Image (cartoon, rainbow over all chains, first blue to last red; front, side, top):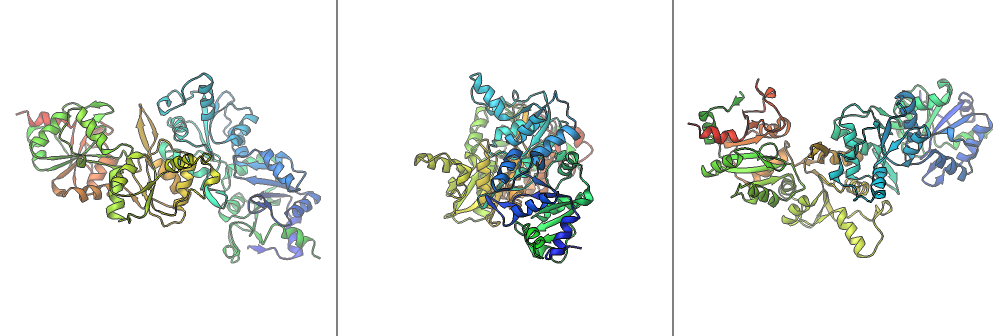
Length: 305
Length: 305
């Protein structure tokens, strides 16, 4: 049964029966650079009641500290880095704790610094095309070209990670493919979002980049570390000792956020400030436990006696 | 029934019962920069007997005149540009004759000059990211960046063509995606080869690039103009008045060349100088009418009386 949260009692019960609130960010907490109404007050209320907010994002291009800073900029303080889980962090945890990749094996990364930073924090040596390019430039070599493809393969690479890369080039894809052609080196995707929202349009998402090397290599990723895939929930559960029955996933998308919570056995709360609308859930939806017009309603309803 | 060509009579009959010979190039005529044995003599024999050789390639990056020149360099003369059909040409023919795109609509091309050249020969105005970049540079503007994505959309574009592009970048993919997001602008793929053979390895093929924008846009190409898809056969048939019953497709790959011939109702001849081996066909194969150790066998067997 899908319940719409519209009364003080419902909001109070929802809050009292859960200890951990997993929040999708864009469309729930903010839209672009604008904080949504009463979100700051809602997070403050949860913190005052001893609840733990955790912010969960598929974006692998930013560091977790960037999220802490963005939240602080909106006046949402008291958030530790450990309360941020993005797909870059989730990927690093996956490589370390699930794949248990030995530290003497390098990780080839097609993606941005969000990913390499998290892997390095866990003690991994990363290699990117940009590293190879910088090394070639440092020794005065000509810029890397297709002819160099054989030399660009690093035999020390034990894992391939693919995510969103705004500096994608054909040669980056080509060298990544070389590392997948043996059919054995683990192939990890940060997430498989088809698009990336940008300035009121959409650009290709991590999933579109993953598709390229998947199609060329004839392989599917061995693990996907973003919502709605289990890899990300495994990472969250590994790092916060959560009681699943007292955790709720709050998001604005049925096919990622709600699926993510539901498929992993936790309650879900859909808010209507982002992608999906009331018509999709009013008649009941298997993946949605609760829904509300906005996250801020939790605060306003809780205080409306 | 799959017949292996091993005798004079068989070779003579095969030649006498066909007027047009469609040849895949790499693995049949040449391998890289080396002509295969007795291929020159075989083509010469066919020409002397009044047969028409047509060379069919999925490579969209080269102009048809490059093929004529390469063949001439091997001593294979008397080949007209009209006897070369690559996926760039096939795509241009498709846009012109099947899609019947009005000439006042531009074609957005993600791919190399092989494609734009063929479209321009048929009277189309093409737009590529490189054109936009050159225009920005000419007016002294800053290099194009993600922030410019909205301005880079050309409302005059009536068709999107995607093929292999060695200068692929994220922004090129992003602008191509913008032209597909309306869900209506025709989306044509030159070909969907997963990889591109290069220096004893494989790089991502046109199909891998097509996959990126297909996944991001949630669309499949409306037409695929390379082997084994019907678009290329339609182009060949449109430009040479061929009797299908007297045409044979000669190739080295079961899943492209042989499928291409068989699915389009013409005879096929597999040669074992490229990808597929005798074990795959000796017991019979639905897509293969005839097979031979090498194309050159047609010449040596024909002359062995």
